[in-house]
Length: 313
Image (tube, rainbow, N blue to C red; front, top):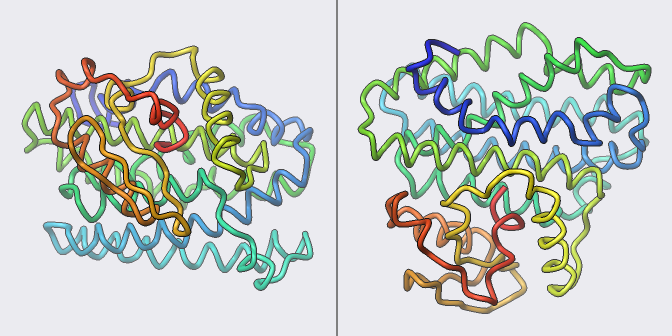
């Protein structure tokens, strides 16, 4: 992170409460004291393999939209690196658990994972390059910060120590620092309104990071829509220690799985339906048409009030 006036400094200060909740989460605590159920860690690693595949897609889209050749090259390298890490998971953690590639392929993405990756792809395709960069940045940065803290704490469990070493390494630090440098370079040319939009995407993805840890701890599965609404309510209560950002309070979208064919019209008049990507893109597009000062006045409709946390990580 550079000076206090830099874009990265402003972005990080905007997620202090979110990051605090992440490092206090039972999943993180369980890694360091060895109390984390290995079934939860197994579930998390499988979901992370699915996530990395979709994250690589989003990175490739960002590479295609990057304004300079060096940035195109960097994101393409990172996309290839994400796929390489996914393959390494098969060779290391999955072999420890006796999990085959077929087992991973047969395991569906958890709802939070679908929502998170759909949101990343939606912003990468439909947003500006700075917005896409901001949406992707928390995955790099938060894992680095968490990795450093976990490296200091250590773990009595050899399996968890191996995972911690990955994100606390100097090699990973260099990758993150390169993305932070790009973010500050891009930030120099952004207007105030553009910075506000970038910050909103950064905050949304940071919250998704918390939800991903929580998803792993709960070993989240697809359930009925009624159960999903209840889960969203529980998540809202657990995150009530800090105020929900206005750009999330204004969310008028609901998750739509591929098997469903429903359409709902939010207050902004933007409808979405058909699949998870269409839903997330619709939500991002609807939000992007409102200035931050307008968002606080938008009240969710009763049937979509549960979307705040379950649909935007």
